[in-house]
Amino acid sequence: MRFGARWAGLGVLVVAAILPCVAAAARGPTTRECLECHGVAGEKPAGKAADPTSIFLGDWEKSVHGGFECTDCHAGIKSLPHDTPLERPTCAACHSDESANYARGTHAARAVGDSLAPRCASCHDPHTVRSSSDSTSVLYRSHVAQVCARCHADANGVGERQLAVPHPAQSYARGAHEHAMQAGNLRAATCGDCHDSHLVLRAQDPASPVFRQNIPQTCGRCHKEEYALYRTSVHGLALARGGTDAPVCNTCHGEHAVAARGERGRTTFVASHTCESCHSNPALNRRYDLPVGAVSSYEDSYHGRAARGGLAQAAGCTSCHGAHSILPKSDPQSSINPANLVQTCGQCHTKATPEFAASYAHTPDSEARTQGPAAIVRSIYLWLIVAVIGGMLAHNAILYRHQLRREFAVHKQKAVHTRLTRVELRQHAVLLTTFFILVITGFALRYPDDQWVRALAAMGFTEGVRRVVHRVAAVGMIAASFFHLYYMFTRRGREQMRHMAPVMRDVHEAIQNVRFYLGQAAAPPRFTRFRYIEKAEYWALIWGTAVMAITGLILWFPSQLQGPNWLVRVAEAIHLYEAWLAFLAIVVWHLFFVVVRPGIPGAFTAITGKMDPEELAHEHPEDYARSYESPPPPHP
Image (cartoon, rainbow, N blue to C red; front, side):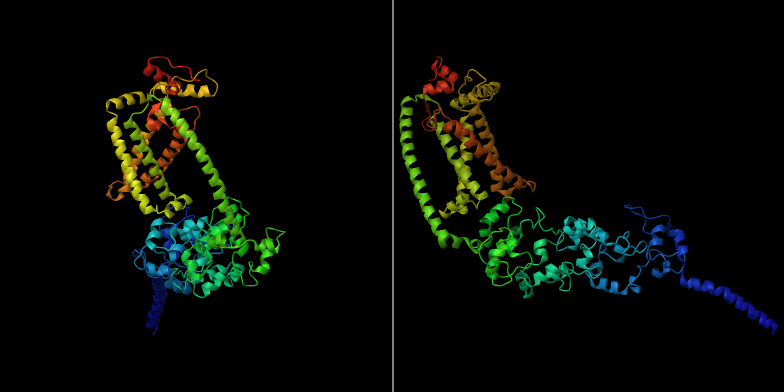
């Protein structure tokens, strides 16, 4: 018995010694044992990448998981050293509600086969996660946008996910919500307030808080007063009835780059800029039977003109109609109800009367021009303007015609010096004609809404006609240019080019000429056949014609080009601004020296090619001396 008892006691001792080891083996290694390999002193350096297997002890001790055993999450580890890689921890064991919501959301759906899709650890980092109420936590309210930006600020990530609104993180950073958050207002909306934290659904999902019909309720969580007003407004009621075009909060305020009310340069700076996106749409006006011309009548009023002119306090749409509580005119509570108009106008015009309030209305342009006393006055003045100004023009045209005929007769009698040959006159005529045709038809394409272009279209000169005329004129100008290139090598052409060649003397003559007209020189320069004035214009014409021809051909035949993709855009810009440069140069420079400047021959030389020797002596004294082999007579 004693022998058996001894062996039994020994067995008990052995079992007592082995059981803790067996239990420890079943439980797995302790946190202390794990940290012997994975633990790193201190906290994770900010902004620096670290080994994902490293656990910074300072962060770990402050995290909400600091009192847990490693095997609580990494249950697959039974002994050390363990196999790698480890199985992904299952957060649902503790966070069942959050995991269930995540599983229903778009993040979980995209996690299947998408290595970039976020999982729990993407936002929470289980080794360093702190309570969201801790201001040092990455999930503290003021830091949430930065966490979401880890994926949604990445252009490649955004593209792969095909988000409805691209670059949301960058847009949110520019918006009023983020600005308020950075200013210390922790009640400002952040990503999770609109999209939820775990149950993130696509905007097309009717259950999503950012589904179009749900956006007013979502914004109303914070903006309760505005939501209450919106629900009873014409926009809110239209949305409730299923109107897919009815505006919701982000229609006016934007999705992520939410503009603060009155913020200059943003969507709500001048309310009409926001409202007109719908109310100037003919299709929407027809669909919802909205008044046609409401936007254009506002823009044509003093309010609209002052707003476009930069007057910040000028009345916009919301000044009269309200921002959220927009009610129909028939509603007694509406700010534009006849009974309330004086009060509405009185917000700006303190002495407003019923007559004053009734004087402004959104009358469509067609009605304003044809109905009412103002339309009668308009008709009277239009006819009066036509009669009076037309009579003045006719009277002056008769006098001008008589004066031109008399001066032309004198010119033909005295102009015996050949300035331009017939061939040169014809080249000038072709150039003059094609140039102005190209200017008119080209600018008509660029500025199709201008009144003069509409007048051309009303006469049948539509864009379909203008484009053909423009190209015919272009071919004519190019052909004239090639002929002129040939003409430069003829005997007469070589002589003209010799006189047209730029020399240093031109610079000195330009300086002396300006000094003379400023009263700083005793006499003007003695010009030869061509002054610096004609030379500058001629060589500018050569350059401009080449540039316009090359860029015009690029725009005419873009599909035949094999150049870089920016070539057509660059050619378009050059073609437009070179046209403006050429047109203004002709008006400011050429017409001034040929027609406007007093004391010169005028435009008759461009018709006859002849010049009065006396005028030649005054304008080109050295050319006179060479042609007549005598010094020029003094000019009267």
